[in-house]
Image 1 (tube, rainbow, N blue to C red):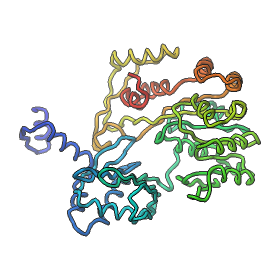
Image 2: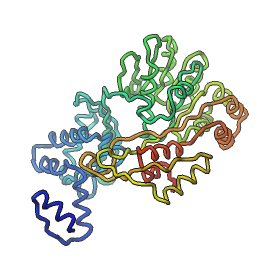
Image 3: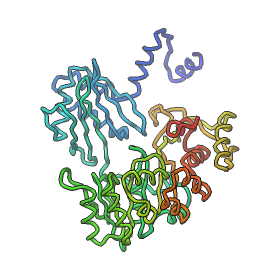
Image 4: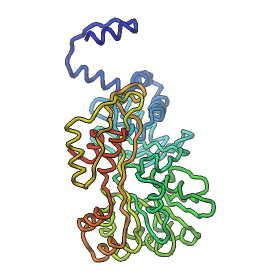
Length: 432
């Protein structure tokens, strides 16, 4: 208390002790998480302000770098939450009587049916630089909305700025192979599309014809032929058949969702094209299992799949407020155990950082995110294991003999190099 009193006196302020219940402090801290709270409440208090209220919610989300906005009906309030750098933060609580007006306004600007009380998808195109995807889902207290904020002309990061390990030489070994397929694997929301765009930007040259098939086109890149799948009119597989007649060198397929798309992607790879796509699975070796489960043959997988890349996104320590320190003995033990498992010696003589929190990072201690990666290059020995139907355990064992390093290894390297913390890595990979 004395320390705080002195700090405040230095600013010309006086501190008064105040006794209250812990849950009251929690409520105050919760409202402090979002600077927009008072603005929203002022908007909500005005009877004619539903248009400006919804506009304020969206614009504040854009300003605060939110990737998603959650508008959630609760028993007595409507809760507004923003997902920033992968974490959800409560920004405001709006009075329940405003719920019907907010729902009506969101449906109107998303081109949804007002009367339907069922799941719907729509888009908001009112904001110049953003294509906002909207999803609604009824729950017991009303309709919940999730708005995904997609910047139309976002700057594409260099693949190495995203956190891709290695050098340009190792990157070229993993990508840009004709007659082959590269797949990026991760759960939803872990940056697969961003990595695809970075690879495309890296490969984009005037002498190469690159065509993308996406749902939707999230970022426009000069020099690429980008095709957007029209709702209820075509599928990835239909579009891919047409693209093959357009003399492409490189084809990006937004996602391999089913056997039909997978088969055409493999056929494209077998006929001289380089195909990039994404798939939902936990790591780069399980890509093989996922393709098998879709019904693709071991021969097709082994003959075409050249590289599978898996990734996760972890929050970066805020550069403005981080505090330098030594690794604790507990941290050293955890990291050394991982090193022993994969026969790697990590250099723990370097300093690490503690996430503190400041105005720049909204008092979270973290700002922006970085990728952690693992790369599986399909060697002749691994092709042999695939074509003979060997399990993912046997493939993993062989891959580890050939310098494959799982996600956890790159994650530890990111900690040692001062990008993130063990706590952040543990959230994604559960290492302790």
